[in-house]
Length: 280
Image (tube, rainbow, N blue to C red; front, side, top):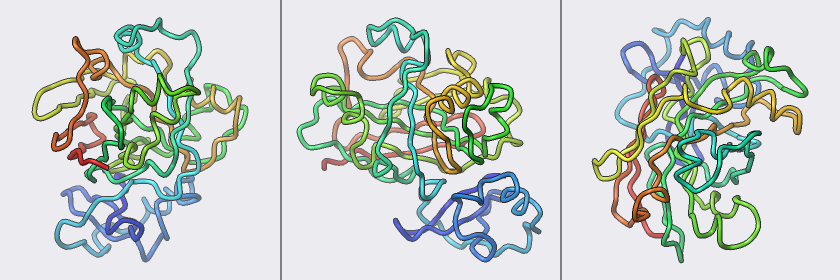
């Protein structure tokens, strides 16, 4: 299934995309795409519905973040060896984990703000992993049973805030709108091999990133198991699993986003996003 949330910011309703690409309203059946709705039982209940009987959503509503009430927004840094090297770092021996503020989350096609004082706002196409059931001290073999599905994420960054303002990476990753999520949450059964998905990102129509999840250093199952050794993962938590090479920081000379530019990105099977850069 492809699950989504649509409507004005803060008033999103749950929906489903049918086989013809039509959005269907789920609000009579579930309160949101969040919490226990993401559990195996919750997803099974949605899958059992007669899709044709769900009301179609007319027009072209705004698409919101595909997951509501996200508790933790966790990110994995330097998870593609060639991306690590383009930033001047060696590939890590363990996952590099940092947090992104949940207030950074926005819809997949919402405008993205360039923070005040920023001159190094950067892009990162990433695959998101959405947790569906509580995970604590789980093995790698058990990990995928705790995953509800996957989504597209642009893990935007302000590189100066990230690396030159002291502390950890979070302050460079957490500005409002720095976490577009969606358009859909694609349930696990829809993806034949999550470690073989093509990834791409364009800025003003020029290809900047091209990659595939097959080249991740740490795969999805390993990441979910690893994180569960340090914290309990809850339904609706989102893990952004890393970016391939081609970020602005790695260009020669480094090139960053400016007001008015348009970023488009996608992952095979997970949809596309489009954002216009605006000044905060």
